[in-house]
Image (cartoon, rainbow, N blue to C red; front, side, top):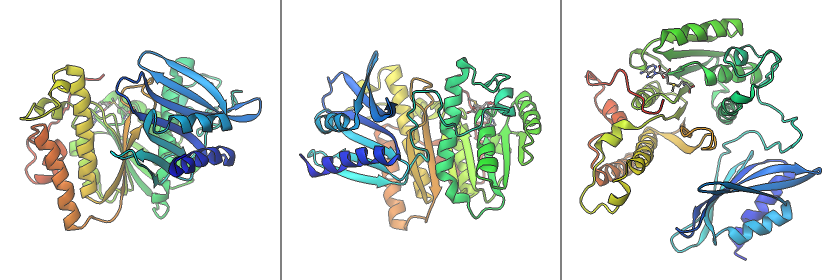
Length: 408
Ligand SMILES: C[S@@+](CC[C@H](N)C(=O)[O-])C[C@H]1O[C@@H](n2cnc3c(N)ncnc32)[C@H](O)[C@@H]1O
């Protein structure tokens, strides 16, 4: 057996035994006509034995099978390279990705961990929660929990999203350890589903001093959120009725912008770059701005994938967010783009995280710009809204004030 595959599967089994396993995803099918799209592997405890549950994802259905760790290792060894070419293991210590190159040679890539909490795996409903649900004022106000502090079944997907988001924030918290207070903003905060949980986690669980300002155009939501913050005794959390475009901020530690419609996400990223935010977390919403510009250029072999509305939409999504990540890289941000929550819960499931690092050298900046230009040329894109904001800092009269959402 290939040494790299063996090393990888050893890491999978040892992570399970060490209690640091979070999840494993096998993707990038070898054969185009292979019916199985991907496999998600989760930890489960069956009859007190650590086991792995494989969820085989097909177009129309999922098939679930449980294996002992040894059986699971054999399964993985038979599928890696034969069925899937990109396999990522999330542990609480590191993310390890096994990728095959064009010559089908496997290589391991390691990154900082995306998740801070290991899989719980118990099937007995005593799952440890990151957020306290009993006597939780804001979860009740938001209609996620009932009087007894139990999660209302129809809101369990929303709760999952909130909890997942807190896990992501947790993995980024080291960036704030010297900040007193942690200066945070949430742009387009809406009803505050993720805002309250972020504030609660940072200030109560991590015991940080947090000053968080949240911006939202809808007055009724701003009122509701300020009321809830008061009831929850969240003194450092304020909601302001404003458009992102009019909001000013400097020296931020954390900027979040979740599901801000179309170019409102770019307005938020622009503010984050200008305010030198240490961490930016954005979950893009719709992608109209780029989609409306994309056209079939000469020799573009992707023409068949652009003539159908849905495929064009998906490509616009990929391209918009890839360009956003590249632009952030140009400003010294280390970016990650990953699935926030499984697609079954919401289609708005991509998260971009960006952590401020050293500015790239002029040479590297030029390389990134070349990649940006190549993508734009390929699809006939005249401009990316975020790039245009950065290039025209003085006259921004053309800015879109009320970006339309085509997803709500
Ligand atoms: C889909 S909701 C997302 C709410 C919240 N961030 C979440 O993820 O639950 C989008 C919100 O963004 C607000 N919004 C859109 N454009 C905005 C802008 N330019 N400035 C401030 N708020 C904006 C809308 O009013 C709406 O409440």
